[in-house]
Image (cartoon, one colour):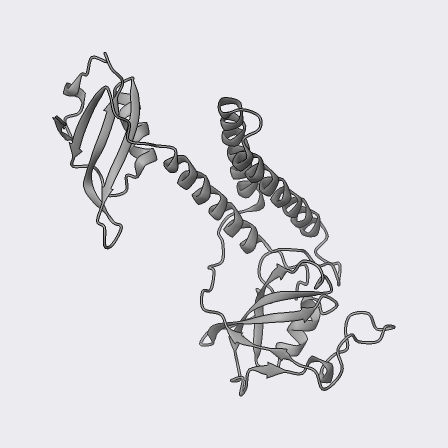
Length: 280
């Protein structure tokens, strides 16, 4: 068993035929580490992953966790009594939980998949994001608060990355535990990238003036950012882009608008895959 929470706990244990389940524990004392949680859950299954959710003051002694496990025995109710299994990792210290206290187990409604990224690949994506955010800060001004907030979040996640690298280099340390695991860090990367694209798309405003074109046959995967970038490579002077979406489903409708600056000579011969008409 590995207790440093980097990849998968009990990764080498045969789990063929077992069902993967996950529960959410809203409040657990931080003294109960990965090793303790695995020990408690051995009555119900084989723990393969633990995702932490840090809590802020005044609950700094407690945190929430998502426990992923392969079920070997059904949990009959929604609670377990950890005091009856193992006090905590500090053998010379009194347990913070009495024997009659319990953890509440709630179904995990959305299980995040295990990542296929390595720590090096996550680091590279951090570097690209830092470069993009730096460019935005230069173009928008050094006091753009949204960009500064994203850089602060990126800096926090780099600390998690350094922590995981340290844990990866010391796999035999029995009680080495990490704030997040690699699956959580990869999820953070994805959420940051999606938020960045969303914020960039919000900046695309349909602008009056110049020449506005109705563009059809737009690929279904195109959003405002992809539409803007694609036409920018075909023609200079793009000042606006908008993808039309179904008002009920939000799905792209394969059409949209591209606005060019006044005085730009348009060369539509290179737009063979699109049906283009001028908006009057």
